[in-house]
Length: 173
Image (tube, rainbow, N blue to C red; front, side, top):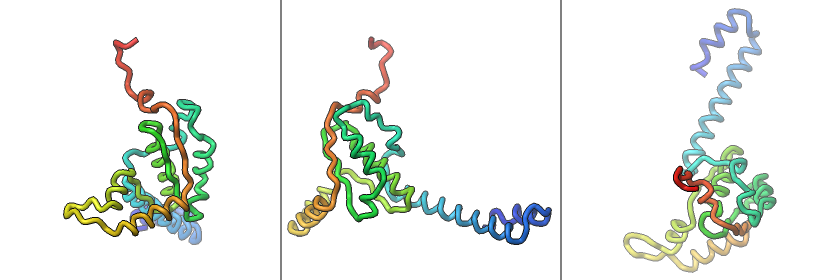
């Protein structure tokens, strides 16, 4: 509020803002600032590799992709229901892009998100620690069972999306 107070006071003294308008503009500016700071904090904590959206994703690159299912997930009803999304498929079909895009949508709606790939999560569950301990295998199995039973499972098949994103070599024809 202090950052915009002087400018708002000048507006108020100049007759551009009444008392109520002055207070409303000042409070709305502070609310917007706080929302922006909270959004940036959530975005930073999410640890996305890239800032991507579903609008940027080329669904036409592979007709086998479940585009309608992915677009339905973009409504985030699963998030509000306490469910999760698991994306399956071969390397390069766009799982990371879709996961980050859905995560970014969730962050915009005020959710806390933590992006990670499967390998580190499985290593943690399997007890891949420096001291070679293994947590309780029953706990790991229980966590996976709960995750799978409350998730929307999306099978993404098709050719790799990555060759389409590679820069072309000018000597290639």
